[in-house]
Length: 110
Image (cartoon, rainbow, N blue to C red):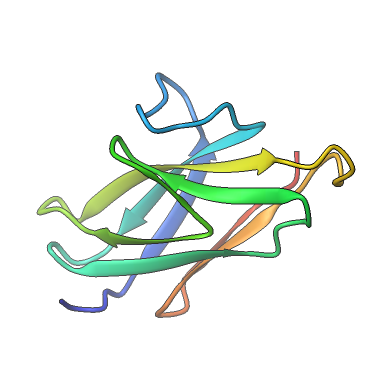
């Protein structure tokens, strides 16, 4: 597998949730652009204590990190969720999504 030169973009999530999605407080459309058939490894940093970040597709939600194979189109779309799990946690959080090759995108607190 090839480590990709990755570009990341976030937008508000619209439309139906993936089958694996939870009832997250915050949902984003995460677009990963990279060479076709490459692999991108992403992690979520700077998430407040008491919150979980999850990367979701139609099969699974992966907490905190994901390895995504890029299809022939050169783009993959995931739902990125921020889930508040502790009643004592901060009311909002953001996150920084980082790829192994250094690409980043920031999900601002809501």
